[in-house]
Figure 1 (cartoon, rainbow, N blue to C red):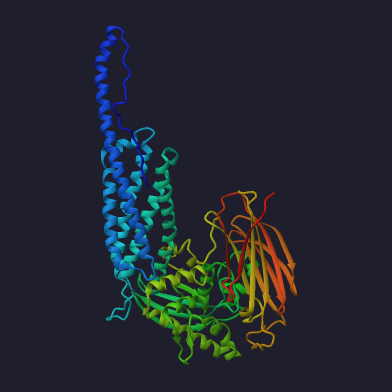
Figure 2 (figure 1 turned 180 degrees about the vertical axis):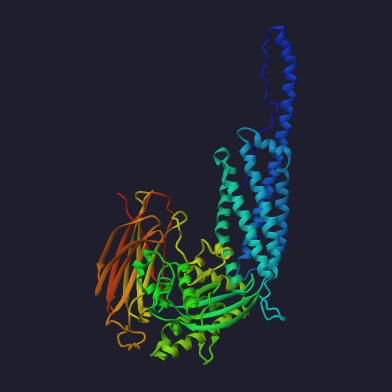
Length: 608
């Protein structure tokens, strides 16, 4: 950001108007007033010169600080991060930020802010200088100390993890959230219509930087809160980890087939119990209040089958249902519930490396999905106790490897973020303060409540064949956004489904449909917040497709299609949603994490 001459210093070419000869009283007035005016003009010129030099000095220091910030970000986000090189850059940033802010604290600068026309320029520069200085002292300096030696290490005395670095990182992240949010509000209060071009450009650039930081901090806070909850940072807790089975699709990924209960306390983690979904009774609804709209869409399976808990694209709902099953059957109410599927495990195994199971089998990032979601059923074709034992052993071994912390923790942090952004890792906490830190992030497992940041549409699936057939399901979505009426756009979501089972492959009974001689899949399309459905179509019905119900769920129009297919057949379903007048961000599509990822094509409607 460069600053031009904000004030011009009078020079010899400036001529004062000559007084015209008038009456004696006028001459007396001139004799008194003009010397006073001269003193004021001279004083104003000196003040302008001082402010001008201060402004140039602040400009130079802010440019140096900006360069230091850019270098800091590059090294901190490198793979692997170069934390050992951050301290000199942080020192340089602190020095330049301190020099930049010092002139803006002087009374003369504040006087400059009060000068008509140019004052907002001085205020803008002060706000930015103070902001850079606060970021340096409140965030960067303490972060360097923590980052230089951050890691998950076990305490030899207790066998638990040393949580001091995690607590320090959480405190810094909390401070960063406060500092950046407050500063962003101040920057947005600057009237760029009253500032010159270069200052306006600098304000816009700083505003964009703060916007990116403001968006990045909540996921960081939620990740730290999630790790803290899993390690008992706030004292003794019970933590349930549910492993979802994408081969039998449900909106959030799949049913919670295998589950592990942990007892955690101040870094110490103990496995208390391992169960499968078959350990809970069927056809007996749990006592959880859910919306009528959800019951219409997902029917009684939602409440009376343990694997139905993840039917709705809302993880807090799933957590309540899973918890209710534990409370009713085992008398235990988990404090925290997390879910992960084999797709998410593949991200983690990229960091940990291969994991050997008790029977000598080895799972890797490349084969964990196929081994757990397909090969296991050919190995144990009847399913039941044998396959449950295999899944439990695999879950336990992978969990133990992750908890060893014998890997690059920063690479693991990236893997966890990737898994959450894919929809394969979610978390819920019974502690309102911890749950609040998940809010607005993908880890929370919810659809956004507004369209402002992004207009999120949902495409979800649920298997109704009592099978593990979704290993072979292919899905494609085409989403067309019509912004010809900008304040009330419309969205058309078209979904194509097809089963692609090798012709000569003989499927185990447990994989093939146990109910029908075809495959039944429910498709759920969610529109924008506050919108309404304007059209429901079935261009290709496959074997047969039925529509409905049409409801409002999670504050959005939601359409259900029940699609029956034979192998090799395709079906196409479509829904169009109209947005209510309001502010709409870029269109984004969230889908069930499928074994064969749903291909999404985005299109823009042609106006006129």
